[in-house]
Length: 151
Length: 190
Image (tube, rainbow over all chains, first blue to last red; front, side, top):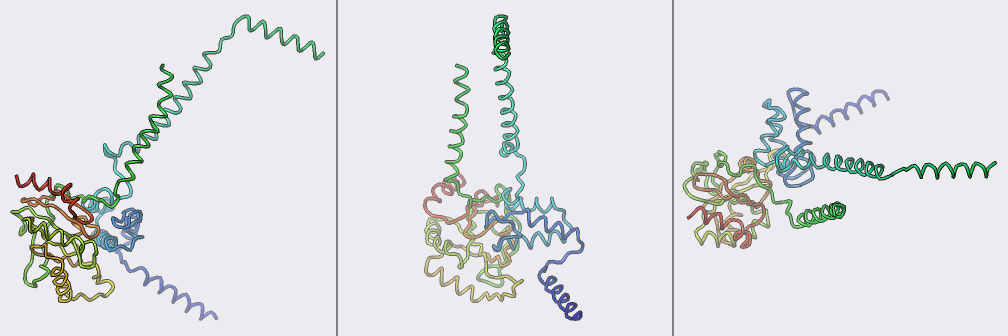
């Protein structure tokens, strides 16, 4: 029985090893490759990353990323390499440019304006309420009236 | 008066949003632009599709304005545009083919048969007309990757100095030609 388990585990191990056909010099490069293939976008099957897509171009990009990583290129260098060829579209993280700055500014703007509006309205509402001497006398009178009634 | 104007703000935001979303209806997400626009043709050395001995380099293409058309016989849209491209050739447009071989993948042990491919291409061009001055065979799709090609058909307009001026994804028809390519070509030839 024990032998069976050992054999079973060995078979499992080798099955896993054949599935991963990419080879790396060290774990750091493997990590970089994994991150890149999840961050780069397939130009053909849009809304899939290149790790996920089966399109020919996605495979070509994966192979290119692999060879660049194995040459010792850093993550940013590989991303720049791809952007040079496929434009900003190929990276899931848009850069801050005059055209895209609105993505960062607009949410902050809306929150600031929203809170500003609330504060402004409350101040306005509280300054509108006037409380005169007559109101005070009337209030006191009413309180006394009700107190008497309760007794 | 001031309050009325303030009340209009949500309405204005709504109108702006409508305009933005309405435009989105007509955008084509497949219309990608290469990162190479305005740059020189990347350097390459690739064989001719029809001849074993001939090798092409980027410097061989200089001196004349040309279209670089990425295509393959496996791609139905490419086949559909061949006859229109042939018309363009007859009007004097210089078209160079970049043959994008899709089926071949050495990782899957595919065998590549150049003679079979040549016969296929010849048969097809005999049927539709041949728009190409010559074809460059990009078997491993290296030039395609350097150009930011995501599939076929795609077409680049390149000027005399080898600068990439236009990138079009999808087929070329009369409408696309008139709207996108013809004005740019006129500018160049004047």
